Image 1 (cartoon, one colour):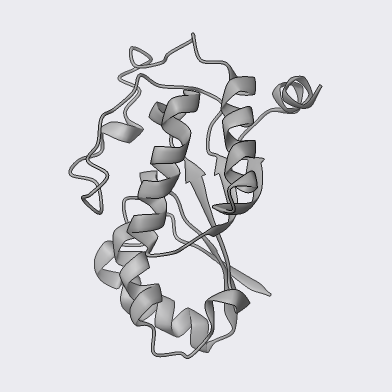
Image 2 (cartoon, rainbow, N blue to C red):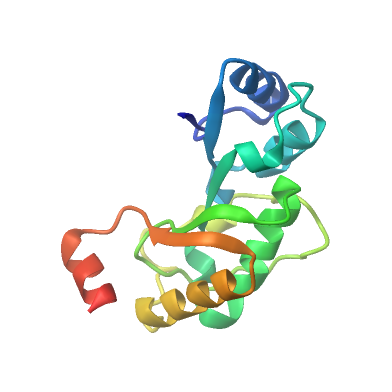
Length: 166
C-alpha cells in the first residue's frame, strides 16, 4: 500500500488531492488535528468519486498536545472522527510526548477556529503534571470501545518509549 502524509496540504486542495491519491492507488492516509485540514480531508473522503471502500483504506490521526489528560483523550478523538467523517480510525497516535494546557473546544463544530491547539507559547503552555502513562491508558480504552483499531506514538525518543511500555 502507498501512503500519503497530509501535513502541509492546503485545505482547499484536499478534495482533488484525495481523489487523485485514491485513483493512483494510495490507501494509507496520515492526518492530524494540528495540520488544520482534517475537516476538508473528511469531506474529501466522504465525497470521493474513486469508489474505494473505507475498509480498503488505513487512516491515521493523532492526539494533539492539549488533550493528553485522560478525560480529554476520548472527546479529542471523537472530534477528529467528526472532522474526518469517520466511524473509527485504523491508528491513533500520541503526536508529541509533551502535554499542553487544555484548550476548550465545541465538539459539535467541525474544524478548528484557530491554531491554539498547536501553540506552546515558547513553553508557557506546557503542562508537566500530565502523565504519559495515564494518556496511554486512556488511549487503550479507545481500542476497547472500537473507536480505534490500533494505538501508538510519534516523535518519542527511545527512552520515553521504553519508559512508557515498562
